[in-house]
Length: 360
Image (cartoon, rainbow, N blue to C red; front, side, top):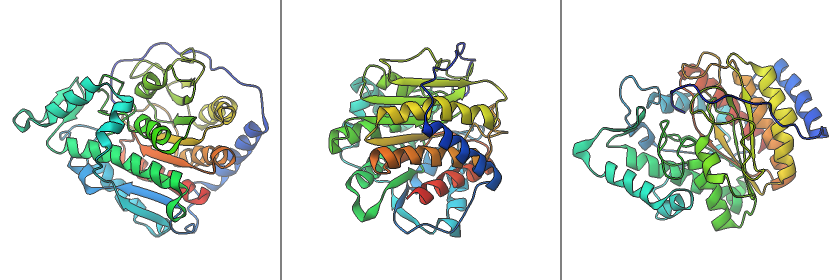
């Protein structure tokens, strides 16, 4: 989620009929507000997978760029703590099927253009638009980010070693990359690629992506727009970059946007999920849930403008996990998107991963 011009005007979210899910989520939210992030004892080892790699820090974006290698170090430090001893840790791979997986979501010309740009070291670093950087380390990082999502999907769908959910600590982020365009720090839409891999490799017919980044995932929406067996739901600030995400943008009834306004805090965020998006997700009956996990809606994020706290990210993760438990055997794959204030990123990412551990 890059910076950019204000987005298009928002609209009122469409609300499905009330449900027990809504009431349970709201009650869980009240408990979470009282308890903070709730970093309890580790869960059983191996049920939550963390996939990352040192190569993600080699994607150099420049000294003043907010999407910087220090983001990886901030998460490395917090996830090395004793509260996360229960994580199963694997390296993000370079997979032979990565480019084929990318082509399920992106046009061949798009992949070819990024590959060609990265293959010319004399022309690097290079910019795509005002904010998306390709440097010497970018191609490997981008392929490993895709590979992390594929590996996590394989793990949760195959159930090897008892893995039930996963967090992919990767960069560059992905949810702004449209079928034929890189933008907003993003080259390939890792969440969409992971979702389509689940369908192609593991027979997951109905796959959902849920997105709580402060910026709307225009790329995922673009890729999913016409497929009723793919679901996309998002809260995001609007108007804001990238200018999409109105509630009226519905695809074929599979797109659910709940715009928030500048300065919104936990109450409207939690209400949007509890009253609109989670009931829609539940009714979709997904075979797998993929999360675009952006933490730039945290108060004080330099690219944000909302006022969430770390506990809110733990709450939404637990609420998504409740749907996953009921509908798809707890299968969740989460991929890092935004979050540019390092202390907030660390605290929010910790709350998110802790909730995955607790759900595992």
